[in-house]
Amino acid sequence: MIKFEASSPYPLCDYVYSESEAKAHAALVDAWLGLQTASIEVRLAQQGCRLRAPHASGEKQELWFGLEVQQLLTPYVEIRSLLSKLEPQRGSTIVDLGAAYGRMGFVIGREYPGVNFVGYEYVGERVSEARRVLAKLRYDGISIEHADLASAEFEPVAADVYFLYDYGTPKAIEKTLHDLRRLSKSRPITLVARGRHCRYLIETRHPWLQKKDPTIGEARTTIYVVASEKSVTAELPNTMIP
Ligand SMILES: C[S@@+](CC[C@H](N)C(=O)[O-])C[C@H]1O[C@@H](n2cnc3c(N)ncnc32)[C@H](O)[C@@H]1O
Image 1: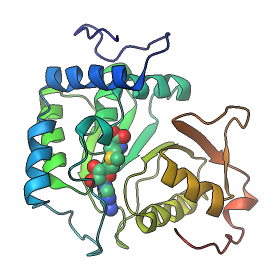
Image 2: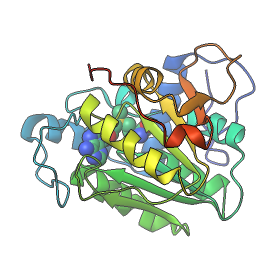
Image 3: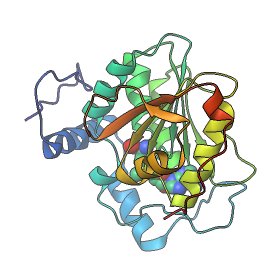
């Protein structure tokens, strides 16, 4: 069991833990932070989203209503371990594409002062709750933006690292991958992909991204970097979006 300690709420675990242990620990952290995820998710499952993103595309989005909270969100210990692999430098920016309650922002705010975080989220109810709790912590450079990633009017901010956990429909994720390809023409980027759907799209349709370390077998997340300067302008394969 991963012990929750308020003095170290996002521990860097050097031992093997199970998914259910990580989720149980994350529930304790949410409660400690005062994030009212459970009640908000129950309301969203019953009533749907009342606070849609500004300039929303109007197309149906996958917002994961009714999914168990700890399945919807990445556990804090996994986020902490991922950040330790990425070793973000002061002044760098990390973006969560489909951030929900912005868990990554809480970890960065506490453990990586000087690193900026932007989380984009479609569901206003989740955005408001994340902002309510973040406001009490007064971290610099941590923000949650209310946005529809799938909107033609939207492009993510230029950043060093993007995190994408199967956030929405294949079409929306595909639009985001094109946005990232455009952004990668002016600066090197790293993309961390969590979940099967986004990794399938990357592997089958986006050869401009390659695994940072091809020797690492399938884990929950894969780190991708830009394959080469040439690859970001090359034509993309014309495969169907599933
Ligand atoms: C699987 S959750 C991941 C949450 C967070 N990244 C994490 O790992 O804890 C995906 C989130 O993306 C949001 N989302 C889905 N479609 C979106 C869109 N078009 N624009 C912005 N956010 C979207 C969902 O509402 C949901 O909160």
